[in-house]
Amino acid sequence: MASKKRPTRRDVVKMAGAATAAAAAAARLAESPRIGKVRAASNVVQYAVIGTGSRGTYHIRHLNGIDGARCVAVCDVKDEAVRQAAETSKDKPAQFRDYREVLARKDVDAVIIATPLYMHFPPTRDALLAGKHVFCEKSLVFKPEEVHALRKLAQERPTQALQTGLQRRYSKFYQTVKQMIDKGLLGNVTHIQAQWHRNPGWTMKPNMWRLYRQYSGGLTAELASHQIDVADWMFGSHPEFVMGVGGLDFIKDGRDIYDNIQLIFKYPKGQKLLYSSISTNKHLAMFGSNRTEFGEMIMGTEGTIHITVGTDDEPATALWFYEPGPKTATESKKSEKVTIAGATLATTGKGSRGLPVLFENQMLTGQESFFQKEMKLAKLWLYRKGVMVPEEDRNPVDIQLESFFDCCRTGARPKADLEVGLADSISVMLANQAMDEGRRVHFHEIEKMGRAS
Image 1: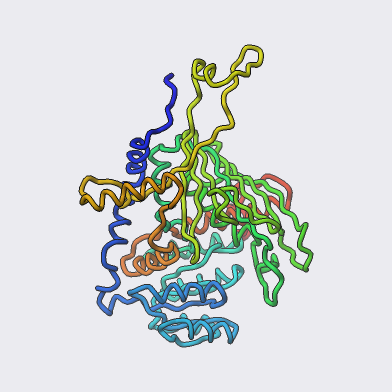
Image 2 (image 1 turned 90 degrees about the vertical axis):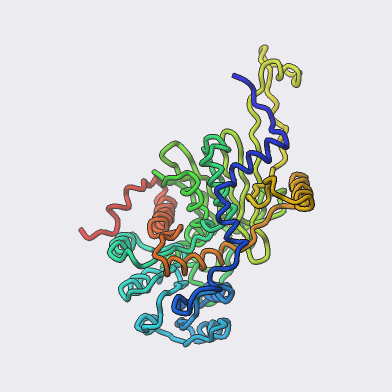
């Protein structure tokens, strides 16, 4: 078998272009005039936000920049939260304390639910029953019985959009990496490592519901759920079982959720997700340690991707590391002097520089003017040297919210739809159970959980 050679610059540009060709439509849409600007007034989606704490208000700030939608109501049980949300919205919506009053309004087409996790299901259920479209933050549901109830209810209402807040599905970087995997550019993807580390982790504050199991799925629900969904997406399947260890070892402030968790999810083809979330160190051993806290490493037989989603202050980024093939006996003898029992040892210490994952509009097409060509070549050189990195032109949070409103208008299926959201929620529930019970929990067990005997 011929040995594999490290790709040339021409090879890299060619392969990256092939990997990102399917992202052309997204790139062209981003460069074209916004669809919302030309919609008739009758196509404006009127929405309400239910749950206007930190996450709900964060969404409102992003919603202010989205065309084709108008906030007509905000709702929260806390007076200060609902007042602040109304002031944050450019639309100055009506204020409510009971979400059922919001759902009774005929001018509400859709709702965005950002309540604490234990309160995701009741307003989602009631909104669907009221004929509204629903965007609900992850995790979509909290208990096994809610999995079965919501699936049945949503399937009875196929014309209503139901989208889960898993914004990585709407990132051009993550979409491009998925295309690279499907095209075989990473070979056989066998493992994913993911982490979300913080230092410090959550601190005790009044009404800090995330710290108590009665209201929260802990680190697994609030952080790991995003990255478990990435693994499902990249592997193209759901886990067979999960095992793990969790501990309440370092933060003694009255909480009863774990302050550190380590999980292993096993998938049908032997693939595995190794996950870690801790509260005592935020180092991230990716991207030259220029980023902290969270990211994923997707490992295949022919390459590795380091990837992380952006924030309001930091861009999303992704690097592709080529996996050198095994050396021939001749090559090994030339490069290694050390032998054991007559066997030449392969070189193991030399790594490779990560190559940027590129979008189609960054590639040379042959249609550029001289100036445009020189600019692209200059950027490609700077990317290759690590001086610059490609950036997404829009925050995936904005894209997912805009996509939700488009689904409301057109009846299209969301990328993070009901089944994506339920699969993610099931992973959270079973992972917590595996840590609590100290055993391997199989995913088929969910079918018997939460059902009336």
